[in-house]
Image 1 (tube, rainbow, N blue to C red):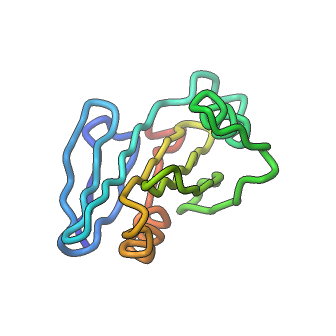
Image 2: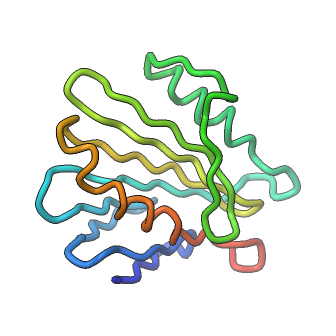
Amino acid sequence: MLEIVHSTGLFALDLPPGWSWHNEPDGGAAVPPGAPGALVISAQAVEDPTRLPNLSRMLAGFLTLRGRPVAADALASIQADGSHGVSYKYNEGEHFWQLWVVGNQATWALLSYNCPAEFQDSHRQALETIVASLRLSVLDEV
C-alpha cells in the first residue's frame, strides 16, 4: 500500500499497488491501473467544531443539485477509521458513479468515483479498501 498524506493535513489514505495519486490544493485524485476510472477527493475543515455536519443531508443535497434527487434515508451508512459517513451509487447513461461524504467534528470529505458502466466492478474491492483507510484530521490536529 502507498500511504498518501495530503499537504493540508486534512486527510490521509492508503492506495493499493499500481494506483497513482494526483494532488490538488483541497484534495486530489486516485487513478487505478488498467480499467478507466478515477476517485476524486475534496476535504475541508468543519466551520463549527461544536456541531457535527449532517452528512446525509449534505450528500442528498449534492445529488439533488445534480438532477438526481434522493432521500437522505436511502443512503448507505459507512465507517472509515474513526469517522462516519454515507454513500450512494448509481448508473447514469453509460457511466457508473459512487459518492461518499465522510466526516468527524473537525473535517469532512466528499469522494466521487466515476468510470464507464462496463467497468463498475473492476475496482470495487480496491475502492472499499481505500475508503476504509481514509483518515480525517481530528480537532487537536487541525
